[in-house]
Amino acid sequence: MPGEPTHEDAAVTEPASTLDRDASGWPQLHVSRHPAVLHKLAVLRDERTEPKKFREVVRELSWLLGYEALADVEVRPIPVTTPLETMDGHELADRIGLVPILRAGLGMVDAMLELMPTAQVWHLGLFRDERTLRPVEYYNKLPDSATVDLCLILDPMLATGGSATAAIDVLKRWGASRIKLINLIAAPEGVDAVTHAHPDVTLYCAAIDRQLNERGYILPGLGDAGDRQFGTGLSD
Ligand code: PRP
Ligand code: URA
Image 1 (tube, rainbow, N blue to C red):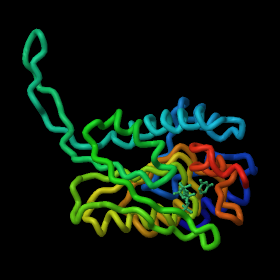
Image 2 (cartoon, protein in one colour; image 1 turned 90 degrees about the horizontal axis):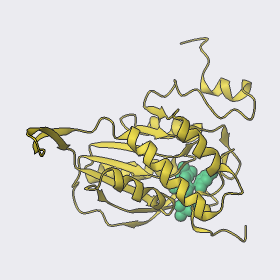
Image 3 (cartoon, helix red, strand yellow; image 1 turned 180 degrees about the horizontal axis):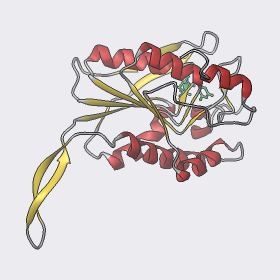
């Protein structure tokens, strides 16, 4: 609507320290406002957080975001006999596939498997070419056709959106009909790219940060999520 503020306007008028970007321009995007998420996110961002603690917090945040992202999965009734009587319980009806993007998405898998122990895990290997910032696929062992109803793509960072868009392209070619993308931190540029390319995909994250820098890193962000989890990148 003319005259309404957009997220581009917000980039100009908000103070640099503001992290809570207005997500109303992206109806497919859910940004968690849970206090536990906000608290853990600050620990994750802190440059003093060592890899062991960093991995622990990635796992905890993944559990909390996963809990929110799974709120609408299908269940079907099953009879359950308690020590006192038989009742109608529920079991998951959707076949769920977790798709961690290597490397950094690996740290999100265990928490999601705690939530959904019967989920299948399909790894996708993508890295960003440092020069072009375009994703390069290096690992994909998906079978010929889709074996799940709902795919949850796991990756801590949504920066330019190139990796997530490529992952969604792969999953759609595979036959996935429902896809959700779970990130810890997203840049507005990445949300724009994914929602434009794939308006049917729902996105979940803990924060929309301000912008990308000239090397495609999220500001303020947390640095390199893979390096911080696995203790690499020390020569940078
Ligand atoms: C990081 C991150 C995403 C990608 C996001 O991975 O985990 O996969 O960058 O950037 P984009 O939105 O601009 O594509 P990276 O390429 O650093 O690989 P790694 O996980 O192996 O460190
Ligand atoms: N990948 C990361 O790990 N961090 C960023 O800020 C951008 C891409």
